[in-house]
Length: 291
Image (cartoon, rainbow, N blue to C red; front, top):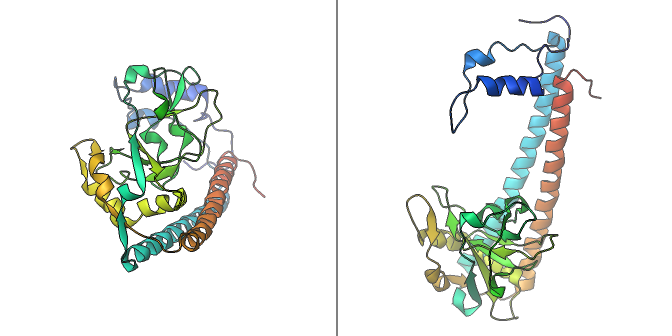
């Protein structure tokens, strides 16, 4: 029912009281659910119609802006893929991965090894990998177990994913640079990840990262992945994959770095935009004015 004034809601959906009511009326032992008839009784205030229209206009502007940023990010990524594909298709000279890199799989672990944050050693795992080929510190777990020195990780090292839970296996082979953690204990890495070591100083590790992102290489990684529910990469076959020999690595890297710079700027603006949109939405729907 339309209210004529922007009144204080009778029930605040974010309040502890409202949350407690919802929990108390929910059912289910593993996945909690609540029926619509329980939600339908909650009342909330609506501003006057002209104020609703102003809110919709402002929030629509935020949505369009966020959509434009997503398109910019997608376009930049498409250009990067196009550059790598062109490099792969136009380069006749190739080499096997085992000619330029060594692969080291991480340590095995048990779920009982997990401990609370700061109670053990940080542990890099599958959840630290994003599909965009970046490291996510939010995925770091903590374990208390004995690890060999070879499993200790340092900032700036290159890894890729061995395992994937998604049907398309899109995460398998996704490379990322470990950016480091400000922790007392140095991290280790799990068997869900593989560390990439250079065999020669003639090639920068940054170039290997891009070679692993070549669409054909990623596709071959997925083809080497077995398993019905959880995909496991057959790591022993990965060294056989061929990659193009880049005649001018620095020139190629300079081109890709420019794109990375653009991607970084867009990602930063996206984060700021999402934060601003949340503030605007909360203030508008909470009855505050936005200038």
